Length: 287
Ligand SMILES: [Zn+2]
Image 1 (cartoon, rainbow, N blue to C red):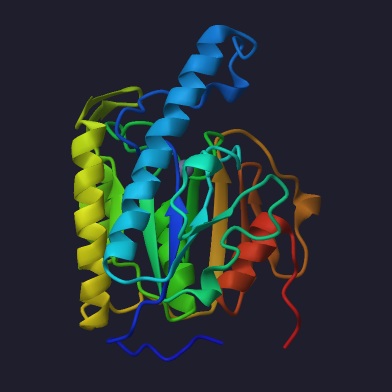
Image 2 (cartoon, rainbow, N blue to C red; image 1 turned 180 degrees about the vertical axis):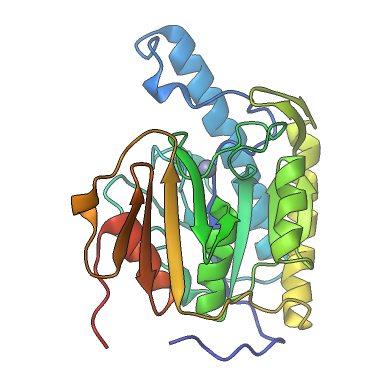
């Protein structure tokens, strides 16, 4: 059940959703699938990305702690499930990570606000560095006909739980895009994208200082009632459109429709149920 959307609230526990591609200093894909994966170049590149993300995550945790937050549940959500350097994380953080994640946002419903760090733009944003939605093989996720980014989905799921999304850092176009869904969001730009694999970066030290300061500010703003949860009305249809043929007519079933070889749609009364059905194959319980 969605909690009532009261605006002013205390913030004791923050959920920190993270990704790699939106961090300052990152302008190439995670090399974990590259053909040079067993080389020194791979080790160097991956370790650099891990340090860059971990520093931005720590800056956000520090800002929350500065503002009196007790605990930050960090979701190591980038596809590898093991990108953040746990030994370097702030002691007030808890880290959710691993490969066989039963649900995307484990622990979210225990928190008072969701923050985002390392965010990239929605798929097919030409100038957005490393833009994609969930996977490079996906063209679009659409909820009730509207294309949604990864952060749109997490913000809307948080909204389902009555939780606001007051803070966001990432590539410049991602910062612009989040404001179309949640205009009050406090943003920190990490870089300005020009194509899939290039950007003008701000320096990590500058970005981290700003993330720390603006995260603390975002916590204060939630306490002052400046951030309402973003929740859409159900029922929900989630369409996944792939770039290549991926579906067959026989994949259709109760609450799921075969549109064409690259597109399927799933239906459910609420957003968490439709997401779990489409992404994890968990069929919603009949009402
Ligand atoms: Zn991503």
